[in-house]
Image 1 (cartoon, one colour):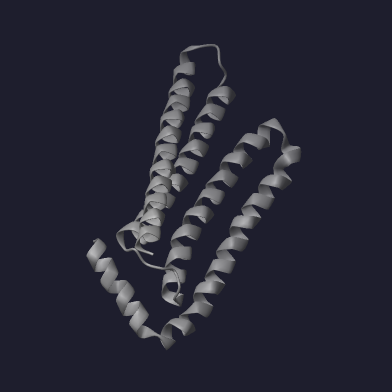
Image 2: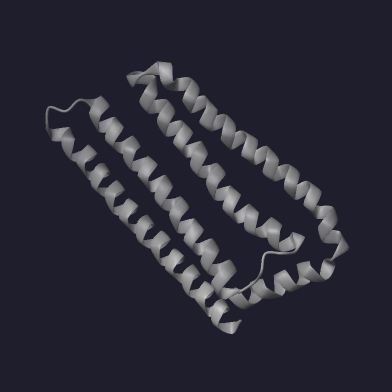
Amino acid sequence: MKHLQKLFLAGHLVIVALFFCSALALVVLAGSELWHGVLRAGTDAGLRIRFDSILEAIGMLTIGLVALELAQTVFEEEVQRDVKVSGPTRVRRYLSRFLVVIVIALSIETLVATFELMHEDPTKLPYVAAIGGSAAMLLLAWGGFVRLNRSAEELEPEAMEQAKSEDRKVD
């Protein structure tokens, strides 16, 4: 059984490394896109083309941030703390860390897509609204989950205390 746990730990470390490498690659690509958007200022490229390059860089940075945050979450929860997501406290904390990143990323992507499509193809704006609506629904569902989960946490206060003690170890 110990060998299986070590195998899962190694799997988590590989996933963390791949998330980190993906985030780093996206940051480099975003920097390159931003650099090209700024450098086009001296060429015949119009303001719209430079603006699109900068928006593209923001989109890449957003996805890179999501990858980096997911790497950090998996590393802290699965490697450093080595906890099993079983109790209500753990589930709420794990899902909260994950969902806050997703909601923020979807919100930023909604803004970027709105600015891009407003001038390029306004007929696709309903799709952008669907992405923004999905982010809003996730936020509402997450809030409902946290509210309903509070009563379950009150039934086992020792789990909350254990989670807090693990936080002190990580800090």
